[in-house]
Every structure is written in C-alpha cells, then in structure tokens.
Length: 448
Image (cartoon, rainbow, N blue to C red; front, side):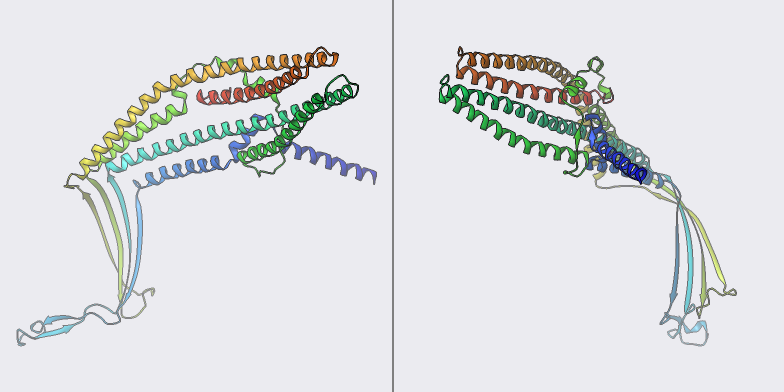
C-alpha cells in the first residue's frame, strides 16, 4: 500500500513538472513556439502550399488531357424527313413527297478524346510565372515570420518588464512604509513636521495605486503574449528570462561584426522578385500574339437499336476514330494586345525603379539600425549607472534627514529621481531587445 501511494505521488510530481515545462518559455522558445502556432504564420504557410499546388496545376495544363463521354438517346417521336416520291416511284409527280423516318428509336455512344498542347507561348510564360508566384508566397511567409517574431519579442519584453516593474514598485512600497513608520516616530517626538508625514502618505498611496495599475497591465501583457504565440489568452505562462538574461542575449559581439549583404535582406529579395514578375507579365502579354497549337485524338463507338439491348452480347457497335491538329492564330484585336503590352512594360520599368530604390535605401537603413543599436547599448549602461547613483543619493538623503541635517524636500526629490531612473532603465532594456531583433531580421541573422 505504501509503495502504491509513493508511486502515485511520484506520478503527480512528474506530471506537474511536465505541465510546468509546457508553460515555461525563454524568449527564444516563445518565438519558436509562435513560429509553429501563430494564426498569421499558419495562414502564410497555407498560402505557400497553395502556391506549390498552383505550380503543379499550371504544369499539368501542358500534359496530355483525357476526357470521356457516354450518351444515350431515346426518341419519343422520331424525326421525319420529306423525300421526293420519284425515288421510290419513277411515275410519281415531281412535286410529290413521301415522309420518311431514318434511324432507330434508341441509340447509345461513347467517346474518348486525348488532347496534347504542342505549343503555347502563354503556357511557357505561365509556367514560369507560377514559380515566381510561389517564390512571392515564400518571401511573404518569411516576412510574416519576421513580423511575428518581432511582435512576440516586444510582447515578451513587455511581460518581463511588467514583472520587474511590480517587483520594483513592491520594493519601493516596502521601503517607503518603513520610512513612513520612522517619520511618524520622529514626528511624535517632535523632530519633524506633520507635513513630512503627510507627504510620505501621499507618495505611498501613489505607489500603491501604481502597483494596482501595473498588475492589470501585467495581465494584459501576458494575454497578448499568449495570443501572439497562438495560445489561449488565459493559459498559464511562466517567463524564464529576466532583465539580466535579456541584456546579455542582446549584446552580441559576433552579431555586430556581421557584414551587411543586401542580397540576404528579405526586402531586397521581395523587390528583386517583383522585377522578375514584371518581366514575366510583359512576356505573357507578348505571347498573346503567338499562335497556339494543339493535337487531339478521338476514339468512339455508336450503337443503334429499337429496344434497350445495348449491353447484350449480340449488340452491334460501330467504331469511329480521328486525329487532328488545331491551330489558333490571333489576327486582329483592335490593338488591345498592344496596349496591354505597353502597360506591362511600364509596370516592369516601375518594378526595376523600385528595386534600385530599395537597394539604395537598404544601406541607409542598415547604418541607421546599427547606430541605434550601438547607441542603445550605451544608453542601457548609462541608465544603469544613473539608477545606481540615484539610489545611492536617495539613501544619503534619508540618512541626512534622519540625522536632522537634511530636509524633506530634498529627500522627496531624490526619491522621485530614483523612481524615474528605474523606469528609464527598464525602457532602455526594452529598446535594446527590440533594436537587436530588428537588426537581426534586417541582416537575416536570426540564428546568430
């Protein structure tokens, strides 16, 4: 019995560990989870699959096409034709006709046709265009993944900052409650004025209100992160990265030394692919002036009977077959095709201009992103020093105030400076992680 009980509790513990692991995420794990479960990413993946099927659909248009047909007819009233009576009676008057009904009351036939496209300029360009369309879908999917990764990163950082803000404000509340208690004791002993006590009470109430607000913001941050990851908003979520981890992961020497190669940038690839698409569109319009050649072969059998006996062994079937070539030659379209070719040429020229513009702007954007990233690293270090210094100043003012050589105004000013430096530091950390992620995606260096 004891062994069974021990086994039961061990299973409960293991299940708890597994459940906890399913809800605990580092920043990298959260991004990886979103890459598989985010709704927008799943939709973009479906578009890629759809484009691949489109390529196959276009390819099959140039392969042999087989179609079959089976038909059955039964005349309720057989058609009647008038024949000159002289055919049957040479002595009949020339204006006399005899009604004659040809054929049987019922007939059945089946037919099998095979067609093969021999030449079509539209098909050739359409085949290349479908592959470019697939590439467009793949690039769009990659772009979507980058955007979702940036959104998840921002949401993760906001959630971590919400936790850190709550911890800091809670710590500040505890410290201020102790200061308020000491100040009240000093007031009762006549060492400070009542306004000093009231000022601390006001500050304490403001901090508690801020704490309640931050709790609500934390819930919202966690819900948003769950949503972006493709989870239910109220799912349990544990963030295993803290401020120090995020800073360490965001300051990457190898990453900063990576050379900028425009051809690896997703925007460069998209602009380049648009040029290919514009050229193929122009070629497609030009091929509309070329003839289309196709070959076909048809095989069929017909059967006739006055009764429905088509499946009897003695039913006579009459075979027919033919082979042929069809050539469709566009002759004149009132210059519509020429106008379409002109429009496609202009679209192609605009795509090339956009590509050149993208190439030039990428270098400018790279310099801007790199400068902002390096500057943000310096800001994080500076604001960390400022926060530590403002905390030291606040403690000195507290000591001076208790010894009677300071005043409440300077102490409150030091406290507010310390609180502001804390918020400024947290904001700089968020900016650092965001800038690093943006620069990574710009350099296509997500795995570095």
